[in-house]
Image (cartoon, rainbow, N blue to C red; front, side, top):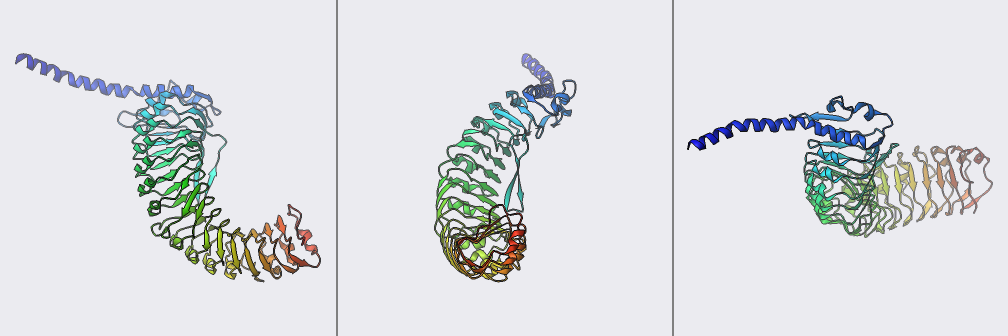
Length: 490
């Protein structure tokens, strides 16, 4: 009994010292962080501004170094952000020792080589940003890419150990040269909110395990070499806002569950080999959809009438498919739309007059279909139009004499190879912003209007293969911006 009491006393006495020793080890581990960062510095072969050379000094506190932030009870390194410094080098495995790191950002530099597997040790990591460029949404209608002078080019495969980073919220690995397959273990990163693997050289299929990323808001997998079908499990991503799978080799039909993701704002499946038809009720559950890009696939069937229920749409690109039948008049309900391209399909019938309701439309492309009938006059009242392309159809009738009275911003007007008749309207000279005019391959008659001489910004002008008569007006000589010979041969 006395022996047991003595043992208890010794244990009680030792525990506080043991705990204190452990705490001191944690506190002094800032030196471990320092050594990891010095290993990174040693891997930098070019530091054009000498920022790391001068600032990352062994004689100063690591927490005062440029790009470093420390926090927490133990005052450990939690942020490493050396983006936009023009650095060249590789990443050392010692970065895996930054055990309190929450943010790793080195984008817009010239790092290369493989990603160290040791990064999988960073269990507290929430933001991983290694990408080349930054994506900005401009007016919700297109993506503008801002490319700086330096880029990262990481190679090799994404290690399957990345699934160990269960606290990760942001993963930006886009615009590198990563190869191999997307590891299914990525589905273990269930806290992930933003995933960017855009523009690499990834192959294989989209793993169905990605359907487990139920916190995901943005997914960029475009610009790779992915094959196979879009997994139906992506329909589990109930708060997904951006889904970009463009520029791959995906095939098969689009899973219907994806059209139930009511949070979607941006959907881009362009430039794949997707087939089948779109669900007739595709817009019934997409109240927030702003951009719908499906160009250059093998989609068939009619354009769904329910498209008119996607009232927030500002950009629709359906060109380069095999959509058939008529253009649904319900598209006229898309009063927020700015870009509409239905070119290069198999559409028939007339252009619905309801398109005249699209008051802020800037781009309207219906080229390369089998449309017929006259062009609705209301379309020429859309004062926001910049680009209008009706080329290569079977449109007939004449153009309104006042066609340019309400088109102050029109820069490109393409109507070649139709069956348009009548005179070329004199009001054409009021479209002062025109830079490109293609009227060739129609049956326009009478004289070339001298008012064309008012189009002083025009660079391309073709009136060839018509039934024009009379002399060439001398006013043509004032078109000093023309970059090609004017063509009006019959």
